[in-house]
Image (cartoon, rainbow, N blue to C red; front, top):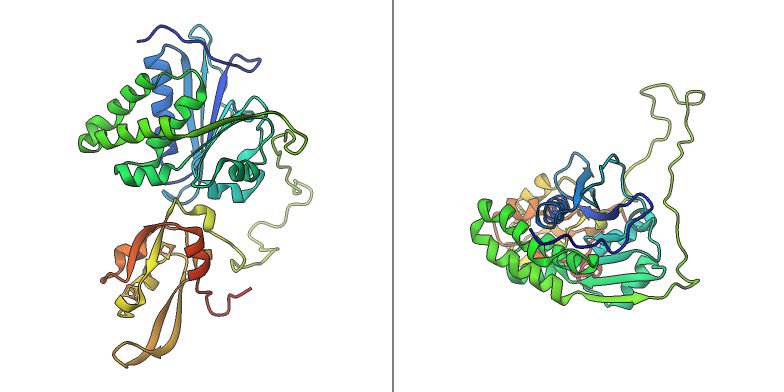
Length: 336
Ligand code: SF4
Ligand code: SF4
């Protein structure tokens, strides 16, 4: 254990607070555990971490929280972190959901974003008030090092925290991944080092353009006096306007029509009916339904279609916004 470092800042309650905004599949929950273990077992702080997520394993919103304090202080709080000192956004697509992921950012916050875009562009997307901003291409590094984006982001958040000892985090990564996946440890440690080193980090002065936003409080318009009768659907709708783009974790299925045999395995497998079909003739001149491609608006990037495809017509690639824009094939009858 290293001698006890000082927390660079705390709220009035004595805690340095961290919030991670993620999508199921990017590893925020594990990253939170590793970060907390490094702070508590490796550096001697008292600390806690917990996550909130839905029933689906992949593709839905995940929030992970961590708190650190002096070892003599008891932790009697298990509420979500509203005003984080360190906010880590595991994929810049989440910024499309607006204030849902950036609420509570103040001039005391450092925001770390997994993005391929330049700092200034990400700052606009975040709508940052004064404070720190770090940007790192976690998916790109993870692919190169055959690791996961969470270890790259652990490197970035370790540096952005201003107090976490990189050696303590490396040890916690080795303790977590070394037993389960020893062959992957080296790549993950390299990914951690690159995230630490390659993150672009800037401090911005507070400005009127990026004012402090209080966390939103949801107040239900329904109460015991006006709640509808149980089981009644009073507001019918459909999913035509939904956009699952922010659910993707950085990968998409790419469609190669020249390899497609139109057997429909992807269509049966896709939970969101993303494939567009038209009647026509296939490559052998046979009449039937022909797969025209993917409507990426409804694709959550689960990649089940790639697993199901018996040919190489569907392949996993890193998501590129321009490619998605140019290759989205709107589902018949679903055009806006
Ligand atoms: S599963 Fe593959 S080969 Fe079959 S229709 Fe879909 S893309 Fe084409
Ligand atoms: S990755 Fe494939 S199966 Fe999953 S939602 Fe997208 S198109 Fe459907």
